[in-house]
Length: 472
Picture 1 (cartoon, rainbow, N blue to C red):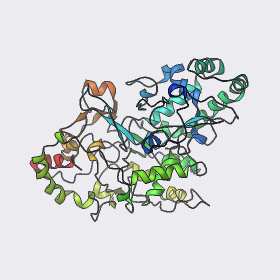
Picture 2 (picture 1 turned 60 degrees about the vertical axis):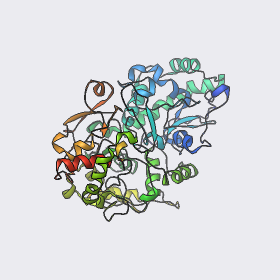
Picture 3 (picture 1 turned 30 degrees about the vertical axis):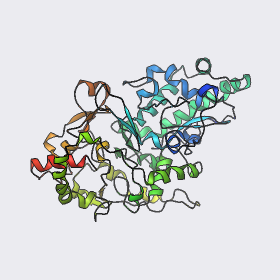
Picture 4 (picture 1 turned 90 degrees about the vertical axis):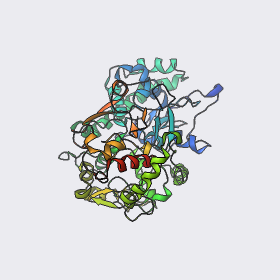
């Protein structure tokens, strides 16, 4: 998702004090020795284009607490960022580029780390590579814009807040903040808001979802004046990428190269073809090639029913969804799959041609983007943690998918307590309503129809199939 406008958020050459680290040491960096920490906190090159100076970013939720969206938690957690007590204090999915341009950006983990709980009072379990079911990227941008438009976004408010938070900024640097930095940050955010004006003509994206390719139209200079397409889809998992090589990727099967998909995602998160950190990306790409999904706790599976469901899966589902099967990673025509076609229509032949111009002059220039007429048949590894289902996340549980009469018209997303019987997250009731965000299937791009495969099976076969699907 392209986050802000092409103008840098600030351009002053200013020395920004490093954030405090554990025991006074600098605990933050652009990269980390351990691959899991690097995935969660390392830079992929987004800071140059969409980075916010660290101390300004740090105090925004304090100064502008009234601009945060409703929801559980405090500060950036209200937007859906996750914390795991890292010594630098930043949430998962944020990167830090130290030095003269010390800035906070976004990285792969912003969209690909999620959580679940066994029960409402249980511990929150963080899963790497899982779709970020709680993250609301659009809400993050809305928050930044609301801050930038507020009269309090000025030096005499922000500087005292930064100093109170621990920033040690010298006299010359304070002068640069007053004369240049804060104003340019404001201008950059507001330029991004103008670039994202197309948000306002479409339904809210909500947590765990993003419109990946409409922002590319803006980046490529395509007019959005008469474009009302809705391209919002669920965030995907990142497991088992080696097995996905050669399959048609993205929800509509518009590219079959894992490496191009990775780079387009990084550019979508805010990197540019020139700022993309290829060495950092290579570390992550190598790691996710064989990153396995987290298995479901075995005590949550009825082994007898799962054994009965396996042959049902082999007969009814495997041809399209099992690794190595003839139709996995291939595109099923929209007329056959019957799901909401808005995402399909938002990716045009013109956009495919434009995507293949990105990276001109570089060894990795995109070449494999294409326009399709349907949606790709996805492998189902780690399926239990990929709820809600369908490309737009419009069906909350596997049970609702296979029993279409139970698909709700509205339900709540973001609540991470797991429904072990229906196989998905709890999406109704007071707790889900209190912590979640409503999803309305009547809105454009949110339709929950289609994918009726398997719904003609007997009730017993479907229930056994659901039990087996937990184990994939």
